[in-house]
Length: 194
Image (cartoon, rainbow, N blue to C red):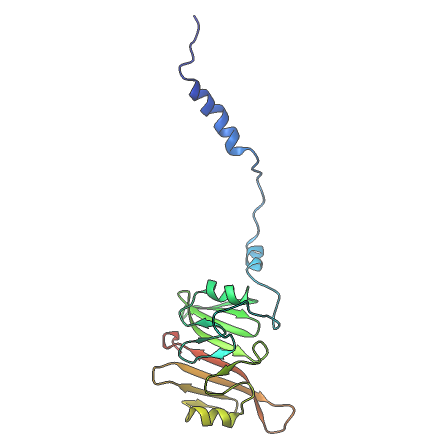
């Protein structure tokens, strides 16, 4: 008695589908967690240059944003302009993620930009609309912003009427005894928790 093949499609499915599915695929050793993390970062530290942006990367707008990005931007938005970070940090108690790009720091809560710290080593020409820049003195900053809510010999902290915070950090100016040099300007959204 001859056996009859009931359906030739069953034969095709049983033989050829597994061959197609596994042809050309090789089992690769997966990257280690360390290698995956390294791939997210760059070795560039201070000499980073932004890609083209619709916004002026040198303009610091206290209640909007800085370095070409606005408050509320995502990490993807920042990386699109500035490239891969050279460091990533998390601050668990407030769930803040920080991307370090050049000497600047971008702080995020729930993937929304809430703080930007601009360093003179990365953006020498950064400035605020009122004329304050990295060429400004301690006294220039005091005159432009009034009475700080916190002050030390090397830092000033101000708050706007809408709750935005702006900090200025100075170091001793090695070219002039007794003078301070502005090196960092940090702006923070009210949602940053600062």
